[in-house]
Image (cartoon, rainbow, N blue to C red; front, side):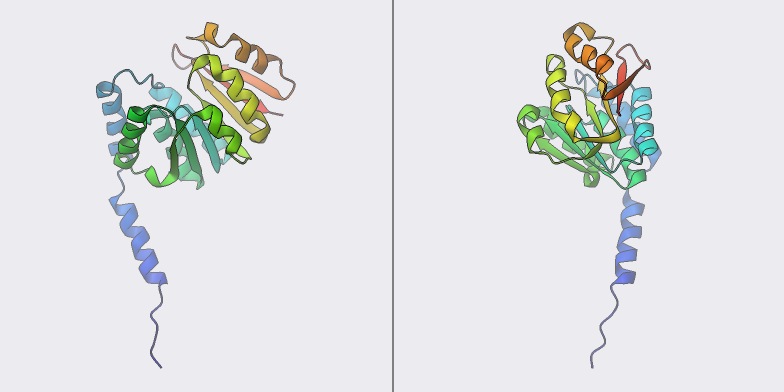
Length: 206
């Protein structure tokens, strides 16, 4: 009888090789810094905000995260760094072909592409197709549409999950209906985090 070799050592070796070839944290941070200095006009979150969002994911032990507004992938990389620690995955939505393409390059360069389902699509059309529950949703897109995104994602977020939104200070006038909703909804308990001039709202579903 022919002996069949076990695949376990091969799989283990593949995992070790993949880990060895992944960029180090220092290399990822260097690439994030380069993105901010060379990829202008992307309206990225601040580094401290990225650290904060990654920390939220770890706190929640989040497995499923949705990002509305990929841009060049800067915030998505921070979210993926948190998800790498929890074993989760990110779905991120972007409707601009150029920014979407740039994001794919940045995801690959930082070794997080395997954690991300990056979709070139209109979020208002795509969100209704997504199944919940999500542990966290991060909104950083067209500001007047924030209220629409909120209404769409709220039923898809688990109890105890979080809806976070960017630019709630710097562009508050463009999302007044959204801000009224998260302050007054009985389903949400909201706090405002000031780590840059932009501001982030963090609404936890009750």
